[in-house]
Image (cartoon, rainbow, N blue to C red; front, side):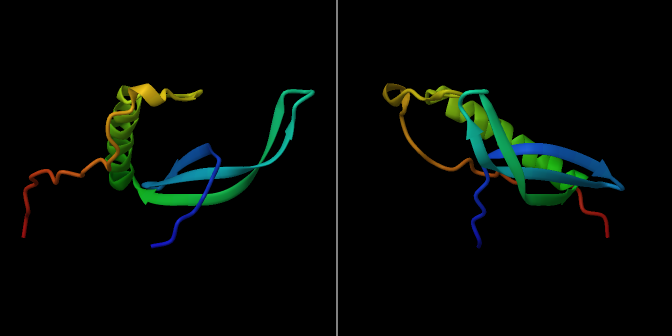
Length: 97
């Protein structure tokens, strides 16, 4: 598996049953103007049903991180309890043959 580092989510597009998520990297920070310049870095392309599953997992991860003290501003180290992955529990689905 290959890791891809990005700094920010930039935008998304949905077309013909496919979701495209564009991510960027910081190019420059202008502290005087309080501006950040971003450049495109990677695009994640998923079918809509896969995106919906992905979004559900991200929501669970966000809630877990928030309960551990992570915020937009960083982390409250005293609030951290345990680290771990969000486990994907397969849902029962009907199979039609």
